[in-house]
Image (cartoon, rainbow, N blue to C red; front, side, top):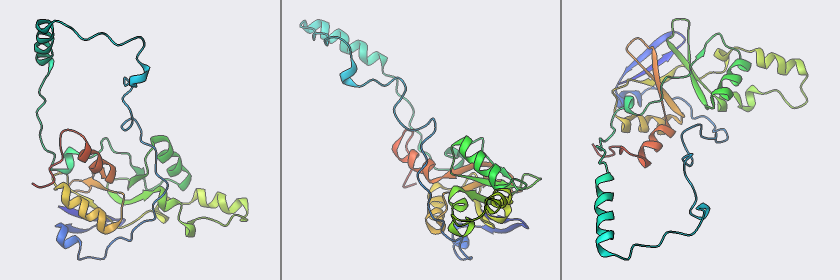
Amino acid sequence: MFYVYGVSGQSFRGSMEQLRQIERVGASARANAIKPVKRDGLDPGYAAIGSVAGPLPAAPSDEAHRSALAAYAQTQKVEQPRQPLRRVDELMSRPVITLPDSATVLQAWQLLAQQGVGQAPVVNAAATLVGLLSRADLMRPEHLPTPDSNALVWRALLAQSVVDIMRTPVPSVAPDTDIRRVARVLLDTGLPGLAVVDEQGLVSGFISRSDILRAVVTDPPLDLWG
């Protein structure tokens, strides 16, 4: 199930096919890639082969000794259940980082930078979704003063409300929705992700392109075929 929320509340509730028939959200220009935070990269305990100190131990020459070692190694292997991921709530990021609609552009910049994220849902005083703000939105040329602008112009920009810059109305998704349908909507809209909401529009998570790609390359496997 998909929804569309804006400053006036919910304006759509329906399937992916119905969502694709309404006026689509314009694709956003992509900002520079953001470095992964505490998720991607090498495991802290990883060591390169060349970093092992000292010579490698010699292989056992005794056949019985090798068989015993092999049998012991088999007992150490623990089979982990592989449960394919299918739904949004199995992949989404939570707790979710949100921006209040009372925030300024400066406060939005600071929050996105501190949390190491590229976008955040915007919520009103009732914690209901009203929009989505990304770094790409903040960097649009039409939002930025010219390089020779007075310092007061830049100060006015930073004091501007996020409501004036955020994307609204914006699609969102229910937690039990099929991942493949979310991927289709992300391709159609060009959005970096969707807020995950309940029937009242309260935000419970965020599903991004990175979340889906991460599920493709890691265990448990993403169910691509259903």
